[in-house]
Amino acid sequence: MTILVTGASGTIGRQVVEQLVARGASVRALVRDPARADFPAGVGVVKGDLMDPDSLRQAFAGVSAFFLLNAVTPDEFTQALIALNVAREAGVDRVVYLSVIHSDRFVNVPHFAGKFGVERMLGQMDFSATILRPAYFMNNELTIKDTVLAYGVYPMPIGAKGLAMVDARDIGEIAAIELVRRTAAPEPMPSTRMNLVGPDTITGAAAAAIWSDVLGRPIAYAGDDTAAFERNLRHAMPAWMAYDMRLMAERFVKDGMLPEPGDVARLSTLLGRPLRTYRDYVAGIAG
Image 1 (cartoon, rainbow, N blue to C red):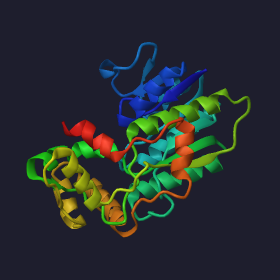
Image 2: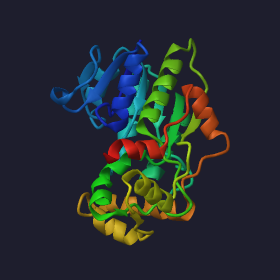
Image 3: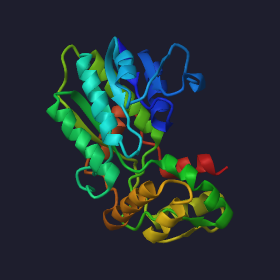
Image 4: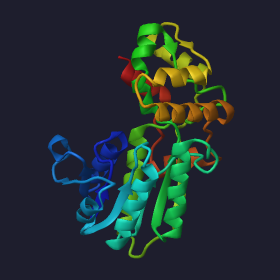
């Protein structure tokens, strides 16, 4: 019984592949460029694109379940619907979908609204789905590490409400657990949603304090200027994406990304260990 992983070469997808292999699953990785694929031995690699139905028909042949991950792109929603329709054509109805926490509340943020739309389609199309709703990835801190080290400033405008930051390794492991569980079930299981959070809620000031402690020198929090955040992002990404990220940051500042009661305990039980902490993650990348 083969499990297909889309977005397999990315930060989360690679973790899912490795965790599935560790559990003895037969894994097929969907990638755009097989020549650049670097996966554990035994992983099948198939060339494909979520906007190419023919390549997806090949990818879904003989598959029992799949992990659906869509990058933040203007056609993200279309990609997901094509993948879901081709999966249904192939008789594959078991899926783990990577959404985002508060997708049903932060509906003014384009990529949140798109993911909530996919969640709705999973229900209407009768998929047996685990919908994973992760909070802010700790791994995003790799993109600001050089700024912190060079200028002594934590630049992400994450506000004072706090984000329940989660490690990509925990996301990948939970996704693999759910994929194996759904694949092994004799009948399709009821769909479920699951918030993926870390053990601590990190504010902008707390993040700066943790960096300060790890580095042994003062790191300041740059504040909540989301307009400046958008302007800076335009040097590294298209204008539409920078604006999308600004809208997300505004919701960070206004509402935070807070876990629901029981989330941390539920995830810790599922993993059989404590969730990885932001402090440990920072210590791991700061050197």
